[in-house]
Image (tube, rainbow, N blue to C red):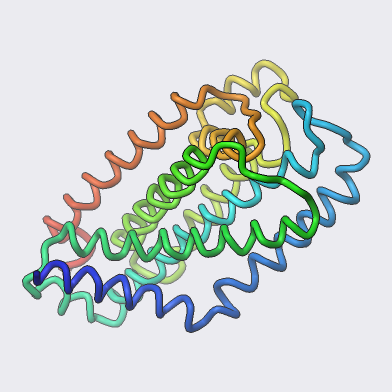
Length: 254
């Protein structure tokens, strides 16, 4: 009962936090997405033609949606948990009779909520430019939730190790953004030279974007089963690592 109340309280706080400042959390991805679709889809896409049998505009829609989900599920958890460390109210949470699993689940579910909400906003903007539907609802929803979960966990670990606000922007700027752009958002793996195809297959975001693309428009460069295995493996590893860090108080009880 105590854990149930604690979980709902953390989740409610997280959702209220990013919805209260919606002009900063939900509006920017809508503007950025509209520019992506206008520039890459309309102006450049009409000259490219088709990729894997679909129009270039339809091809980039799944990647743009998932790229927004990745960045916002990550940034929600990293900024929220680091703020709780910076303002020293995380201590109140740690001394309360609440399990580490509940604390982690509350923050991660908050990140998932923001990632899914931003994904819905971006999908709504895409309707203004294209007519992409959903071919496989189960795969689409599963990839969406799993991807948001993975990057919410990654954001939590970043927040645990961060010592300043600069530290919480290093991973998004120098790791997440490059991997997202190189994850096949705007091009097919088949368009790359063989050596770059091999290198790109080491990028886990490539599998998530292609699995999401398969769910929406039915085309993919990778095996869908392998994509789920990789995503699930990363989630399991990051969950265990997060719980270990909470248990030991690394980066928190200094």
